[in-house]
Image (tube, rainbow, N blue to C red):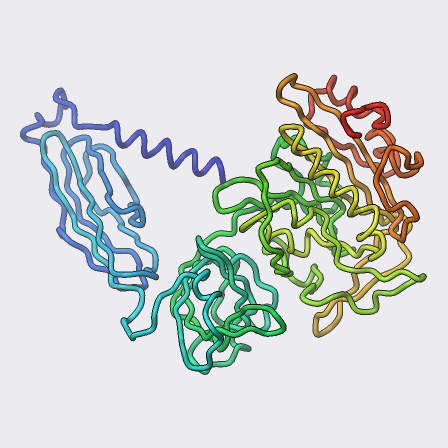
Length: 483
């Protein structure tokens, strides 16, 4: 995706710099032929593609005023043919744009117009944050537009919709007013799409959500992330990956291109072998959203339905709950909603989650204030697993309960360009130690090297070799920075 964006930028820069040369052997500037027709194109709200007929006798370029207008060719040499003009579906008010062709001293302008994406039917268009603050009503309809962040129930269209002001839980989405939510699948909506819905406001069990929502408009989009057989990036926090592992590498970004977290997902166990992410002091969290949903990068049949707590979740005196691998408290906005995706959730002992594990996460929020970045890896060890919990799907799926969970933390200080490392490993059960400290036994607090021997995974492989050797051998008890 980055490569495509780079090529697009390069193409724009190239075409912007091209002009019709005065030494053009075909024709002098003042005689260069430039004919474009028609002079205007009109599109319906659904968008589409129309053709311009062009006849140009020289090197030419274009300037487009309207980022929503795309051309099949932005510039080039003499041509006699057509250029496609494509516009996406419009979800807002009527809009206009212009395309300016230039060849030498000659110019030609094409006007582009598109109908409004909605009929002025008296239903107010409202920001999601304002909608959330309304009183519940069974009669007052509102129009909301935003990006589909994630889908929690494919059967009924339960999803999370987000605009620049906040998010809302859409409790069921029908194709039309008074339509059936069960027909949601016919709409083809996926995470990353931009949609407009019309809905009522209600609150259920303390959750603010839409009621009787139906689709008004849809603009297809791309979810900000990708999957692969192995890691394709050089992020410091990444462990080793291999196409032979049989696992799926996932990388999540927010809408601005800033990475959120990576995961190495095991479709057999229905959880991630590890999740890793950078954590900075500027990462602030918002009010907890509890937006449990499927990860858009993995087919739902390979994931757990986590909209409610696990079923059959008590074994050996332990109750296993939905534990975050990357804490939701480490993120805000769109990235915090993604922290509730199934790829970031593991069956975790409730007592461990609220005990020493919570204490370690709290310490990280202190450590990050004293360094530039923490590079964190959180993993599940299923090598001796004995139990499986069940999810909330109509036909319950089984999720492996890890026998242990671990955490590796790498702190980077820009001032002296230094790294220090720490690792922790806990059996996935209640722990008598409630606070994380340097007094923990060696089976729990250790060097990164020692953790790697336990789990059989090479961590922080993108560090320079000499730095990796040094930092992974450090005994965290000897590093006063941590304590």
